[in-house]
Image 1 (cartoon, rainbow, N blue to C red):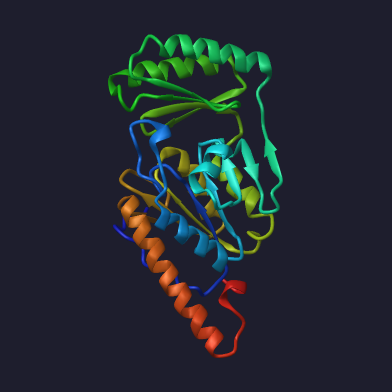
Image 2 (cartoon, rainbow, N blue to C red):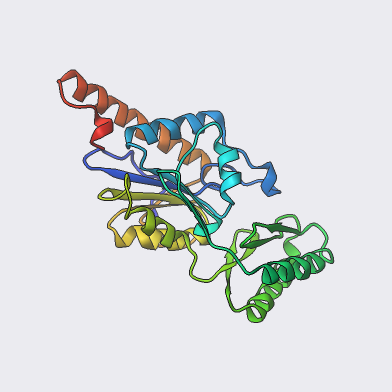
Length: 267
């Protein structure tokens, strides 16, 4: 395990595919999920990075794809939402897993009733997954975890996914690692070296997948991790993006001035 406080800008000596978590990575965590935003400068940096990597950039998040689109609007990227239960490829084709209607309805009812008895907790329904937030009521952590464990016992098609002040219920077999692995088998990601930035327990599966492909896994924030590198916080991610783009743009201009093809077709 590498516990570096920062990661140097990437040197464009190969072809990279970039994957980013959102909350806690590209956007500062807020007390409620709907308050999260990505600054305009960060969106501009993502747009330029996608251009330089021929579109091999995707967001990989626990959020539904509709929320991811809203956060980066007017940009449009390949996406893995709800930890990969929803995935839109570079061609715009979307695949979605779903729970049986009766299971989804039962979970919504049971979880809504339970959360209503725990003030300042929040149930977020995502169609095929459910998130139980307790950031504003940390004293309910154990109660929320117990509730989630009870639901997985009652509905064995579900898996439990702890996160930062949240516990999620999602379909079994779904993970950010599986989503990244799927992307890496398709254009424009295939044949490139994956780079993944994430901050939470949900991102560890992504780090594992990237490590297995000899990629670059970057943990944002504190805590044990399977990532090889670390950035301190969201502001450090923005600085990393800025420095990476500076280096890539410089090399792009240098190559074009020498009569070579644009770096955007080679990175």
